[in-house]
Amino acid sequence: MLDILILAIALSMDAFAVSIGLGAKRCNIAISGLKAGLFFGGFQAAMPFIGYLAGRGILGWVESYAHWIAFALLTLIGAKMLYEGLQEGIEEDIANVSGKMMLLLAIATSIDAMAAGFSLTLINFNAYLACLIIGIITFCFSWSGVLIGRRSGTWLESKAEIFGGAVLILMGIKILLT
Image (spheres, rainbow, N blue to C red):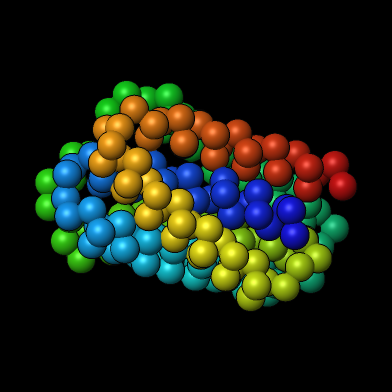
């Protein structure tokens, strides 16, 4: 259970960082928070499940080195998040937060979660419940990210990405060692 919670928090950091940026745009805070939570939480729940199903489909063929694949995927995703967190101004300026824009942002922030979903095949935990937990935690982080962005501006965006990337790399190492 702890592994799932840590994975959920790490995966939600992309959505959290974008939500901070959305909140800093000074949009309607209640609608933006709910919209961000629903879009990001929904996609962050669905994408790992797709990755899990794909992982189960190929697990029989790659079972002997599946931990290496999970390690590589989590490390690559984590390194990408670290890189993005260390770059200045990498997030594009979002002037109009329409439903279409939220859909694109939700897909963009959850693609990594699909790859991380492969690691769910290696964790002895119900995948449905794991994806639900990931979605709920991402909803909460996205909602709070909008609120934090409204009050603080964007200075936390990169720190959230760096934290999430470091945690994913550490989870990959843990999977490799166990």
